[in-house]
Length: 217
Image (cartoon, rainbow, N blue to C red; front, side, top):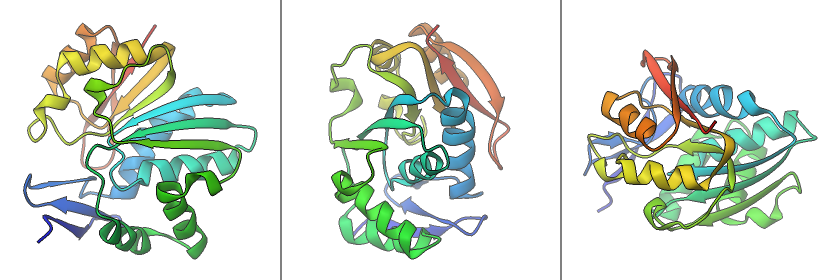
């Protein structure tokens, strides 16, 4: 029996609950509005360049990817290369149920499923590659303009929040890279700073007082 199930959140969108970790993939205060706030408003919109390479650590449901594509549609001159890491992909049947439940239109559902399973069929504005590598094992240098960091919380997945992970991400980041995450835990922010990022606290999404940005100056 799967340890994953759909769970409604306060903005009407759904998340997925992992009963083994007793953790959700998104905020229970609002899955969609959390992703919009953390990864679009405090990520993509802050750089808003014509060409961007994005790394997402923890693709999960693909919600951040969908919202990125929605944003690109309103900024037609933008070209994005998106690299998504997800070592533990959600089983296809559950993910398609989640996408069907959360999609606002039939077209959005089709686009979302294509982005997760058939990305080469999408527009020339975005190139998507999905990798099952763990971030600790990825060997890339000076590649990314934005890092979406969306791992489970430090209390649930502590191995994802150590200095070594952020040192590797620092190597992968271009100068000027923006790192964004929902988390505002003190030890995490100290680890991020120790890896070389300049850390900034900004207001969080509904239900969270703060979230964290990191900059490779």
